[in-house]
Figure 1 (tube, rainbow, N blue to C red):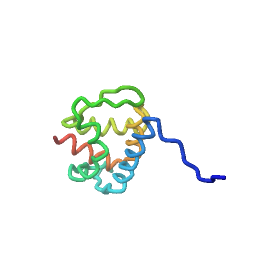
Figure 2 (tube, helix red, strand yellow; figure 1 turned 90 degrees about the vertical axis):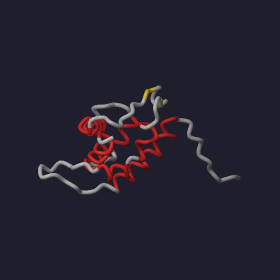
Figure 3 (cartoon, rainbow, N blue to C red; figure 1 turned 30 degrees about the vertical axis):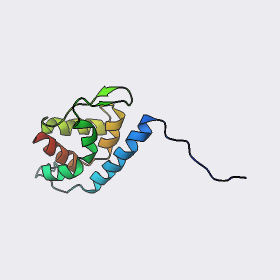
Figure 4 (tube, rainbow, N blue to C red; figure 1 turned 60 degrees about the vertical axis):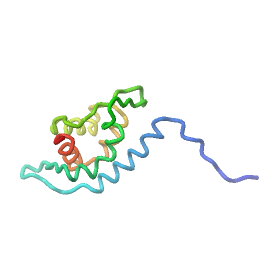
Length: 125
């Protein structure tokens, strides 16, 4: 009798692509810095954002890239966007107001400081 178990291969695009993204998110969340403005809002730091951007680069810095989960989706280039827009978009994904599952997973793991740092990085290019 063979008692070894081999789990079925991951066939879902979500399983194959979301897990690495979640690992990057966890690492980014652990690297966040506590910089805060007088108003209590996080102040973005582009250098800190550069250290956290590994989760963004694979999709948002490839011209013409299309994601295939949950359906074919043209991924926007975010470099040069307004930092306020990037920060508010990430907050909307985290809150559930935006529905793309991969972005909801990524944003859900980000702190306000992480979002501010990423917005500072991409808003400054």
